[in-house]
Amino acid sequence: MRLIFLGPPGSGKGTQARMVGDRLGLPQISTGDILREAIARDTDLGKKAKSYMDAGELVPDDVVLPLAERRIVEKDCKKGFILDGFPRTLAQAIGLEEVLQRQGCALDAVMFIDVDDAVVVERLSRRRVCPKCKAMYNLDTDPPKREGVCDRCQVALELRSDDKPETVKARMIVYRKNTLPLVEFYESRGILRRIDGEGEIGRVFDSIMGELSEARRN
Ligand code: AP5
Image (cartoon, rainbow, N blue to C red; front, side, top):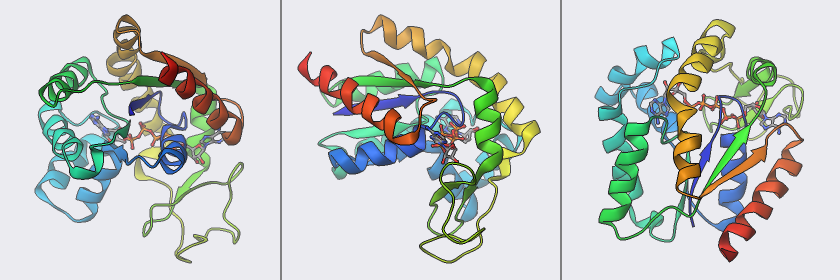
């Protein structure tokens, strides 16, 4: 299956994309992770992306689109993939359609995981990530076994640099302006599925799997 997980910052796209990817044996492709990795390695891409990400702005389409295209045409994506955080603008969505058309395939479903603004702010202030293995925790709902330390690597957990309250606010504004219009776009394509992202993680996962079974039948 070729899937998109769409939703506001902190809605649980990454958490769910990883779980669904594991269940279905599909690679999870997060443009945010690819960009953070590039920043950590101080590559040209990282240098271009850093100032946008630190400000909570979108990295320009002409940087992100080729990056996503290169990843989607890799061998492990032949049987499908889950896109997490891409596309985020209409130009990216149209660019993705063109890439898939060239490959003779199409998207199967778009999971729109929605949560309230207050939930976003709360969740992101409580998120912690492992700088080494990228494992993600939440101090309230999914804490590490030992306070402040990654279960796998025993490395000190960090707050993501764009999870500061003022940057989260900027990301929400950008989301509404640039990404929310994709809901209508994919609705018009008949492949949008709405998921209530406010239940506990296992329940959200079950809803997604239920919607995916239905999408497979159609
Ligand atoms: P990106 O990394 O994609 O961030 P985002 O979309 O803002 O989403 P997040 O990663 O913050 O949240 P999420 O929805 O994945 O939630 P998560 O599962 O982590 O992008 C970062 C930046 O990169 C962008 O601002 C932009 O600059 C740039 N960028 C990336 N892609 C781009 C593109 N295509 N075009 C242009 N620029 C791009 O969960 C959040 C927290 O909540 C965690 O602590 C988790 O444990 C917890 N949680 C999850 N689900 C639940 C639940 N059901 N109940 C309770 N807690 C939960």
